[in-house]
Image 1 (spheres, rainbow, N blue to C red):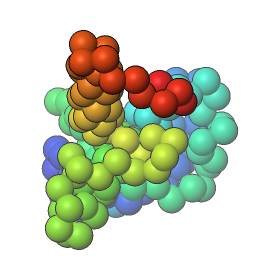
Image 2 (cartoon, rainbow, N blue to C red):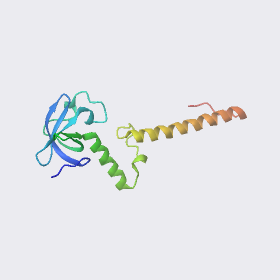
Image 3 (cartoon, one colour):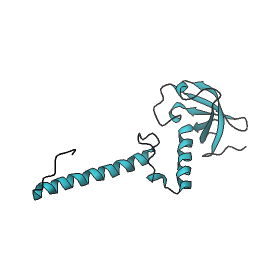
Image 4 (cartoon, rainbow, N blue to C red):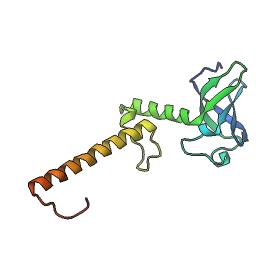
Length: 142
């Protein structure tokens, strides 16, 4: 199997170090998933996320002339998530994931923040208008 830049492949974790994990790819080659490319969350100890023998999907992010292959688990997950939303007919930028925001990309978080900000500004404008007209809103969460 020919390895191409940007392609998502499945491999098996063959070794773990303090700075990342080595993944055996189809065709007998192996690449490195740097610790920063394991998860979208901060990874202090890679052993909490991966173990030798785990099967993982990785995106090929770099192939240098010396044959070293750079891999990313988090980018592969983002690609899979984008495909899922495109096939469901919902554009990825309108899919906000879970309430905790665990499945949100930066762009999704930014879009949600902008919408929340717009909603809050409308509330502030309504309150200012009510003060000008003398309308008193019943007490409550404000």
